[in-house]
Length: 177
Image (cartoon, rainbow, N blue to C red; front, top):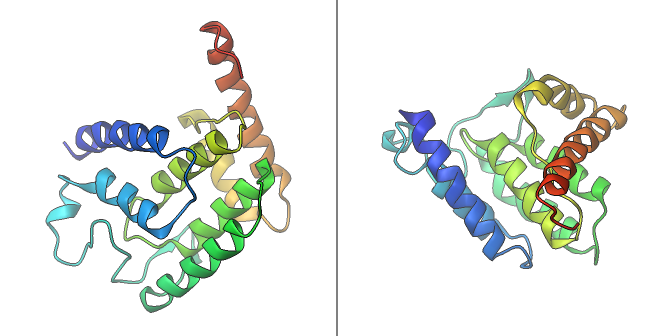
């Protein structure tokens, strides 16, 4: 049931991002995405879960430690300040933000989905063809996240491959990009 609810909520997030595509990325928008995504799920009924707010309990991703709950607000503010200080963003800038976001892992759950939604929004804002990480690319995507900073090509190539697939959809429907 949670998968069905989150899928419907994901479409609501996409609608929001299209409406707010040109706005600056903010903590408020990021928390709103999480709130929409997780509303109505079994996680939302857990006292400790904090739907739409930063995590209350430590978590990890891929065997990597993440920011402690008491560090998240400060780290998110610093990340957004650094990112928003750049007038325009490249594909690499968007991926770099995404990796930093995932390494902070600000929410109890849903970080990957929120992070990928953010990338979609930022691609729209900066006139970069967006992309969707489909299931067959997930393992390459996870490897890319893990290796970013040592070998950026893994994530870059995976996202460019996903972008090529998205371009094929746009071509099929004769949508210019």
